[in-house]
Image 1 (cartoon, rainbow, N blue to C red):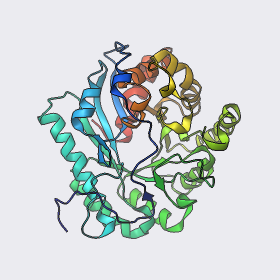
Image 2: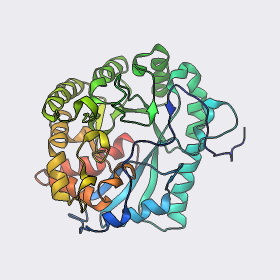
Image 3: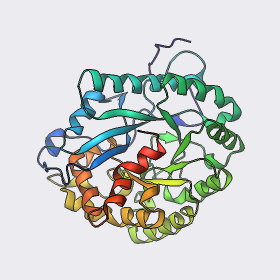
Length: 357
């Protein structure tokens, strides 16, 4: 198996991924119409969730991300999250995602050596290995840890599923109830054996499944992405209050499991239905903060700052607002918190969960 092969793979795993996610198009000239100075520019930040990729029709590499980082915010380090890029095209299919691990490490080195950024780009990695392989995923994880030079801290298997085809919240097409499959749970035990976390991405109608996973794996850190995906697509559009109530109930039940953490972000995705991209000029941070505040404050209230972390979800969310604007929005929401809670939300929770020193 070639260590250098990092081309896109068509190998099938438990979760198929379509070539293009339903992301809102990035329009640099539109974003350039509104620029803000950073609020609290000295506040240390770890961006707990971003991507780097070369996908059909979409490129976002280290130089693009470093350009966004130059927004005046004090981003100390970042967490790269898998996005089905640079998969190996040769060798056993279960090892294909290691190409992405190599790519992310290479981009981290480029950011430091070529762009001389002070931010430790991709200081930690959330990779993808097919946990539905069960015990057979163990050797894949071992190789991935080795190739990442210890930066691999978590594994994400996208579990987003809905019976209604109009509710397309992800490019991935996993089977229903993936998290409850016996083989998948055996794969979770392989994570625990290596002290790896599990990053979960699913929508609010599936949160009970994540609760079942948390019940079965009390010693494994679970990180729920994008506040649990309260839907505003298809039949849920126009029913924000009802969805919020259902989401709140499920999140409250999930909060009873102390190993579950939450990433606060992803609000630029179409599934949230905020439609920030539909206005003549891009939104300012005050408007974004007003829209997302109920979700952010609810998560902080239920889980506490020590189990919550802010994320940019760039470049996915870049179709709706700039990097500087989303971090200013978070700072507006957190303005009334004390220094310790702010430190947790913006830096310390991510540092602890992903082992970033």
